[in-house]
Image (cartoon, rainbow, N blue to C red; front, side, top):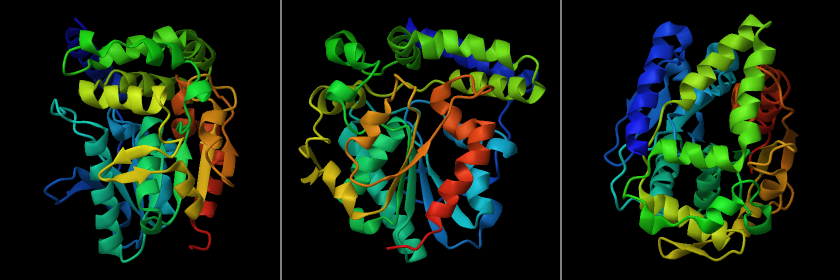
Length: 333
């Protein structure tokens, strides 16, 4: 039923796209590699300092490049960085798990480090930021800087709104592929103020502001792009991170190594947090960081979902991202 709902939602997304809410993405090309789906954005091909963007492995990644005015990709490229984006496969094999995901990120980090002869900087949002942090913790010497955008690192008491669902999820009842609509339903149940009431309130208050309303429509269109991640990946995330909190406890064993959150102290880390969020409480990010540079996102209109507001918000692009870029440009280790 939920997989059928995915098809319906994707069709609805296509209708919104035809109505004028399509993303306006920067030109990019596929980097040739047998294992990776890696985008290189062509707006600054002469740049040398690489930045790797890691989106959440649930929906398509163009939320980082929705429209030119609020595009993280364009902002980074205009600042002189060589911008790459790691794409997660939309049709994941049934055996795809947390270890598979981290292994691919390590391959991407190694490739950029080798191609540019310097360690890449890594930016990750939400669960993508969590996965990026785990990968970086395995090879902190191979990464220049890390930016976490509303990305949880500590779970347990810091989990927030998703904790009840994470504690009681029954994976034996689920198919080998998890419908994106099921994940959306779980998010609605966990945080209706964000995914239902907040969304509709944002639409209402955006009505007098044409730019905000157009942005709101494009974010809604993005929310309808569903992935169907493997059950094993979701099970690993829930059990190893949400339930057992292994990364925060420095006890996450992957690829014959141990990913320790305290290893992040070996490189500069910045965090964009929302102190009003129940979905990703600021404490779930900051608890495991020793001395991060913190940028605070203030909820704003036109973003549809505040969880992505730090990526697409107009005020966020005026008041946060210029400072993030200045921080990235700082003296490298």
